[in-house]
Image 1 (cartoon, rainbow, N blue to C red):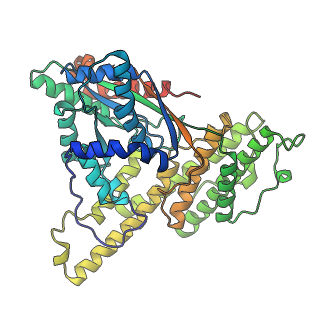
Image 2: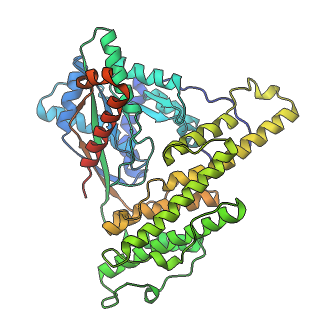
Image 3: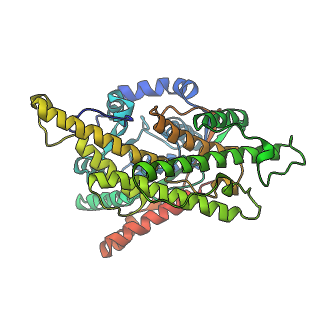
Length: 480
């Protein structure tokens, strides 16, 4: 979604899937070029692809229906999924002698908000590729009907990200939303009603990115730019507590120094934002602590307490940021931070994309002016929620537990996201720190049909158990 909207908009229309084989073939033709020159991905590898190839064979022979539930750490994940389905699956099928009918393709579910910030052309392209949108934060009946119908009746399987959004972390799976499990049980129900015998499966798909070369130099440059943006002076190594100085030129010494720069940046940003919400929004926050209180290194005394202090401050800040938005929309804080973000997003959309206004052009100047003010104010209040989204999956121990270039880069890029939003820039134009290899893993299929009796006994419990099993499967595929 754009950083700020100043005018009322017509209602969000449902974008129906309209699979076009010519568009799909065109995308397949330009896909290698796009992957090479428009992304940081240098190679996509996958394990257990033959399992997926066999599932496509069974699907095409009306033996199974399945949903690809893929991890969503990065905005490049759809390209990885395209490489898996369009190239790696056919390769594995040929190698194993598995007969497949072409094209090998998949429908997919995407967030209706993507065309709002990526452009209407993206909505058209997703539709032509067989994508179906869903509006987060409310019961989107049109979106659910479409996804449900595709799952049970379309010529291709369907793919979705059960985390609901990117979390920026390769080695942390965000809490899964229950919609994927519920939709899978609906598919079983629809097949039974139609007298069909296909088995319904969920196929977990792991995705992890690794830099071809550890991006220490571009990471240092990015940290320097963030320090400048925050008004922080350059950090001298002699200023830092707990930093060994016996061999200042060692690789380990440099890694720890970059980690401390990251911690200083995070702590400074926390302090500034605490002051911002306290002074201008009259919110009481966690008492501020010195910037240096959380700068202990991994495996040194006080590290746990330092992380706890920082995470307590971050948790309080995220809560306050959401409160500022929730109070404007008259929403009660309920559920997880992600749940609250979704409700704020939906409330904001209802103020901006007005379903109660049939014809914006027919409004009087007075009515249009008031509607524009509401849209502008809603957009500004949603800005606070977007800041929370950027940090909702941050933990205090992620980098400290494994001081790797990947984890440092992921967390530094999250800081970049926040500063980009604060500065009014485009948070989707992230800097590239280097070429990356992608490791995908096709997990063992989870049978939903085998859980049907459990679902009939207790729907809520069956959905919760299936969601948890999928969570565990995705977490088990993470490679350190």
